[in-house]
Amino acid sequence: MVKAWICTLSVCACGHTGPILTLEERGDATTVVDAPASAAFDSSVFDADAMEGAAQDSGSPPSDADALESADATEGDARDSGPPLALVLVDVTAPSHADDPDLEARLVGLGFAVAERTYTSAISPSDDADLIVVSSSAEAAGLDPGLANQAVPVVVLESFTYGTLGMTGPLQNQDFGVVNEATVDIVDPGVADLPDGSVNVYSQPVALNFGLPAPSALVIARVPGSPNQVSTFGYATGDMMASQVAPARRVGVFLRTGTIGSATPEGWLLFDSAVRWAVQ
Image 1 (spheres, rainbow, N blue to C red):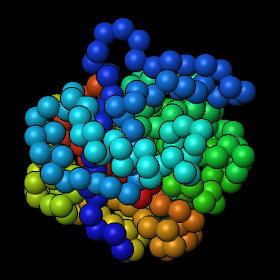
Image 2 (cartoon, rainbow, N blue to C red):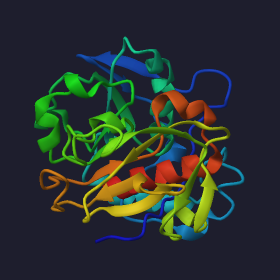
Image 3 (cartoon, one colour):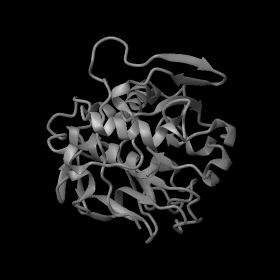
Image 4 (cartoon, helix red, strand yellow):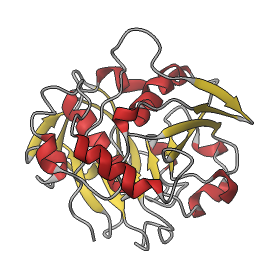
């Protein structure tokens, strides 16, 4: 199983003034059509050296021209029409939907084009998605039943959907849930260049996802003092999850859409690394 979650961090302009996304309507989706060239996505080259100092300055996009040239070369043949597509499943009526644009901007900063979809909608091969992201504005009860079997990488920001997607058992507060916490314990010190041990992923204690994954899972971080509460974990394609085989990579992350405003640079580094691993 892949053990190295290493990312080349490309940061969105979440803190910049003025518009950061150019949007247009395309069917039932809102699509980002103007992803910045500096955020070119590279699915095969992850330069650990480029991460040095990223936790201290998460506002600077990569400037390595060679990395961008490599990204263009590796993605050009497969996706001549543009950057890889991330579908973000949301509930537009949920209060936390107000923070979904920040999540989507982060994905744009990582080199994706982003399309927003209602969480109840079905996803078909014609959507040509490279990644599906389940926002925590989505509700487990309304997710399309076919999502669990999609052969597309899925990153989940809503722990209450873990059971529905087969990633954990079905029992709330045992197999999945949230806790108020600001720190996580990094289990694998190689993850995103974060140190082993306690790391502040939020600036203050707020809602943080956890799950109890199957033994096959790659465990990245835990809730401090709670070995059965895993805050970030992943399954490789073909791994036996809690109730089904993973049809593509599946990742559960600590971050919730409604707590994005409290995420630290280290927290974003962990999130970005999880996304990169999902689409490797």
